[in-house]
Image 1 (cartoon, rainbow, N blue to C red):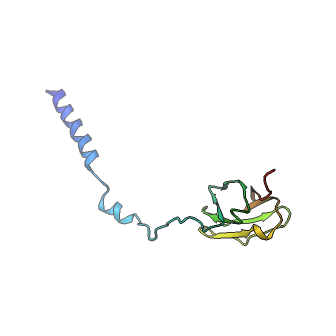
Image 2 (tube, rainbow, N blue to C red):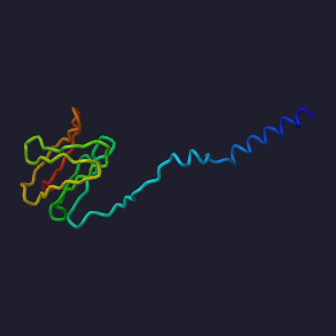
Image 3 (tube, rainbow, N blue to C red):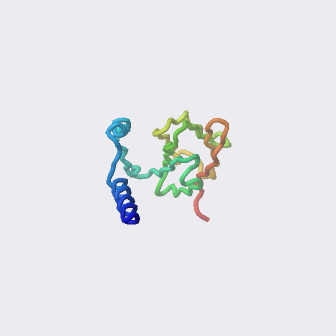
Length: 134
């Protein structure tokens, strides 16, 4: 008889744990999102480089200038960032989270552009290669 009572109590506890949801107080404390983010493809001629989780995606980008000529960096991280090349070819303003910045490579010489994002004291590298294939 004792085993039956223990088994029934166990089944009852498991069933009540599975069926219960958060309390009304817990539901009230949770905030619902106020905005919806939609991702649209970039316009013709634009390649998107996302910055998220402390790195560029893609970090190494080869650009065919006959097909694409603008590179757009989108900050999907939680920190502001700033992008600049080692040779001084371009420097972005501070890009806040959710914002973008573009460079038109059609006005620049085909080259291998090495750049860094600066977040605080950290430097995160990336590369844009606009040289024709050989």
